[in-house]
Amino acid sequence: MNSRPVAIEIGRGGHSPTVRTGLSADEVAGIIRGLEGEPDVTVIVSWGKVNEYVLLGISGANVVVRMVRPLDELYEYVAHGNDDRQGTTLFMTSGEPTNIESRSVVDVETAAAVVHEWLRSGGEKSSLGRWERA
Image (cartoon, rainbow, N blue to C red; front, top):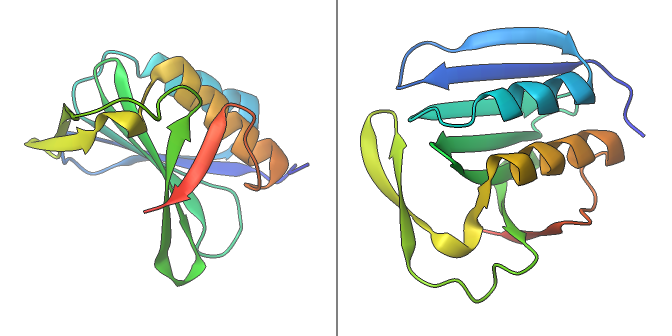
């Protein structure tokens, strides 16, 4: 279990991010839940592993969750039950419309739970879905 303090960066609409450090996994999950409904938010969560972090794109009630590991390995989170989703979901990212594959879109509560689990387990597994190499 990870007990190291967590850092979180929150950027809105392409503006400079707000940074908070020394947070617990519970606090981070609460902050993510509080962002539900925001139109264009980017969140970076890190906890001390070199070059590993989780990146969330929040657009209203929709979230895409990605994990970046050393050597720029990129993973995208797919929740159980999302495999058959087709098409794309429109997101606002830094003020620009972006289409994200719908199978990679989760709700804010799921995103908060995934990040909480990632922080508690050290990023290895998820009971809510799986990390796929992007």
